[in-house]
Length: 441
Image 1 (tube, rainbow, N blue to C red):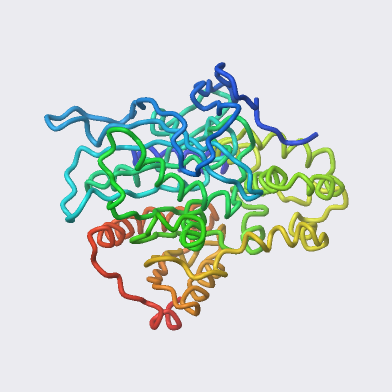
Image 2 (cartoon, one colour; image 1 turned 90 degrees about the vertical axis):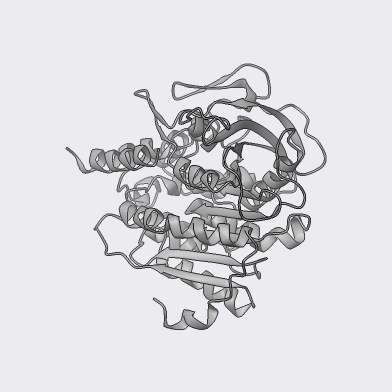
């Protein structure tokens, strides 16, 4: 069995145990479903031609069948799910539709007060619309010969629901919604999608959450960056969404450092998703980037634009970005040589603003995919700004593969992360851990 297949098998096993230019496969705003790599994306995911003015406005909703569900006297376990689409604002200031899912738990909330709400910001799923986390709740594993989509975030969702916490999952801008390409690791787009998911959940008929419900954010990897960015931008963008606690696991806070970790790794294709996302966010960067790409690089970006994580593990494992450029430069070198690209990347830096509310930053000390040091630096920066930070280094040995070094802390720390967040939702103070951070790895 090849290393690629072993890595893919490991990712699938974990998920089962847990329960020219790049464009979208087919941009759509009509009623016909889109087909992406052999997967039919329901017509629900096609945004309307015009969007509401107010951020967080619920555009549409429909019942969503959870693949992993059991009947009980009190209702289906772990709860009843609703597919949602809501309006947000992208980093360019324009309107955007975001899809996701709200799950009303059957379990009773025992922490006091109104039932709390957590926004689940998914980790890296891919860039094809079929990879959306809301679809992963309905179809946890898709293997059709054209794509491999794994709903690995389902475990964290179910763990929160078991505590009686309502959960709203965001698909982010352009992932699921078929009108544009997913703006992968764009901190503003992700933060806005996370915060507006709260507003959409509050507006959903039949949801038990209220304006008085405490709100928490939960995310790892791409999701950790999204929740971290949301905690920074909440005071200015969504002052009505007060945060009781934010969990940010393995956040890609410094994309320059993350590029070094990803290039040539198991998840090398994520570099292509990043570049695609940057060009979607700022089309003026396209001629700058394309001047450096060779034919293979342009083909790779187009190919990756419809891929999920599983596809990328098989097709682009350990690829070096030097194979994509005309002069054999790495993507990191290209960015460093182009002021416009360098400025765009710098604008994605997380850690420059004080986060709202208590935050828990967890990062694996052996993580070399989303490097440990840059995540720790974010926590240090937040402490220097007076943030209420709990920093948790997850000390695990390196197993020799970047993807496994990155995902092992997710599994090892997830239970503690859920407990920490539910304590905040119950109104228990966190207490800052900044004093201890200098002596922690």
